[in-house]
Amino acid sequence: MQPHLPLTAPWEQPLREDILALSDRAERLRRLLLVEDWNFHGQKDGSALHTLHPFPAKYPPQLPRTLIRYLTRPGEWVLDPMMGSGTTLLEARRLGRVALGSDIDPLALTLVAAKMQPPDVAGWRRAWPRILARAKEGLQHHSDRLRAALARRDEPTRAFLAYWFLPQTQLELQALVQAIEAEADLALRRLARIVFSSLIIAKSGSVAQARDLSHTRPHKVDKPYKSALEVFRQKARRVERLLQQVAPFPNTPWLLAAADAQRLPWPAARVALVVTSPPYAANAIDYMRAHKFTLVWWGFSIRDLGSLRGEYIGGESVRGRVLEPLPPAAFQPVARIAAVDPKKAQVLHRYFSEMRRTLAQIARVLRPGGLAVLVVGDSTMRGLSTRTPEALAALGEQVGLRHLATGTRALDRDRRMMPARRGGAMSAIEQRMHREYLVGFARPEV
Ligand SMILES: C[S@@+](CC[C@H](N)C(=O)[O-])C[C@H]1O[C@@H](n2cnc3c(N)ncnc32)[C@H](O)[C@@H]1O
Image 1 (cartoon, rainbow, N blue to C red):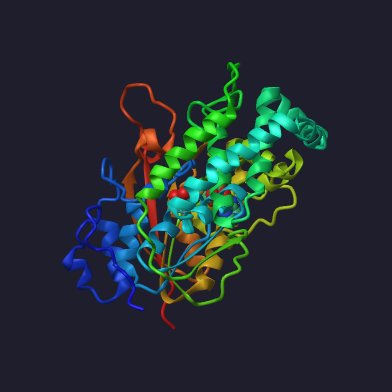
Image 2: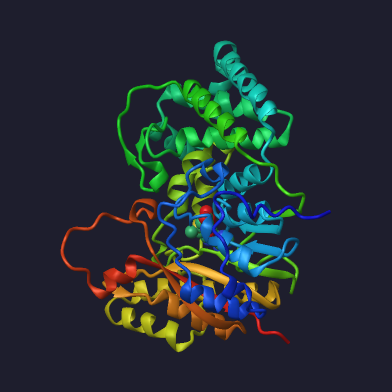
């Protein structure tokens, strides 16, 4: 089969001939990191599917798209081992590359599966009214069963639900969950689960008694009752319009795994390109804090979710964690922070240890000559910079990768959810916090 390459789509930027002329791909990446504008502010992103559900700290689709187009050919393997909402995977799939992804976040896994294999619009148009009708029927005739299902949850989960959801909303959400799970077709069921999640995790208008869940900091607010079924209907309609814009994907394979980035299930020496953005140091975004609002409805208990939270890279607890010896560029910020706050320094040591193991896995799965780009921000602890991009470059070198270059992009504050800043000149550390860094590596040829 001839892979389909949508190079003429209006959202495609032309590729630079001088960079394409470089036959060595590592040299191409080095040049790209130094010359390309990675900001993409205000540009059209080209696929409605990216907007299916909010996800914190997504990067713009143009970022992986540019790297994939310059650095790989159709049919080659592209991996994101911390895929989040699947921006890299969706772009790889649209461009006819084999798309591989993993994450430990159950919401991420369902969301990406829904994007990689969306149902056709006609199927969805029939499915969502059927789901709604089943949910209504459950509420009208079987509310005792819905109450019993809620009563079977363990105590901490019940307390969580009671705190964040009105009693009537709980019944409606339970009815919707059961109606969705009764759908026979997996692609429809997955998409319906994501629509369900978007009733709860939303910037505004969430059916939870919480504000701003898509920004990961839940604040309790007392809101008047709003019908979850009605919101489901609105969101389902929006998704119907969105599916109408989705072009068919090339017929290349894709594969997802629920896996820790430190223990990747992918075979050795096959991947041509990794594009990924790990969590920041200092656990700047607590994914579970918002995602648990959906995941409790998918059957997870608050306790399970608490333990899963401990597995996120950069978590705060260091008990029982294996700390690795660090190269000087990673050790120095840890030592500086240790002088003022030894506990925080341990947290940073855990983060760098986990990133070292992740980079070792990336080195293992890349084929000789394969490339990797990690998109990270800097963090501060006790007012001191964690020097994350420099530390990651050195950690990559420690596990056998070659650091090629580090590019920068200005953060769009509104999109990447940074706190608003007051006026005045920016300090050097603040300037670093307003940027993201693209740390580029190659696996040496043997
Ligand atoms: C910055 S987000 C990725 C966003 C993604 N680039 C996008 O555009 O949507 C970081 C991701 O790392 C994942 N993550 C955190 N710890 C992980 C681990 N130990 N193994 C795999 N993934 C992990 C989080 O669940 C989150 O989805």
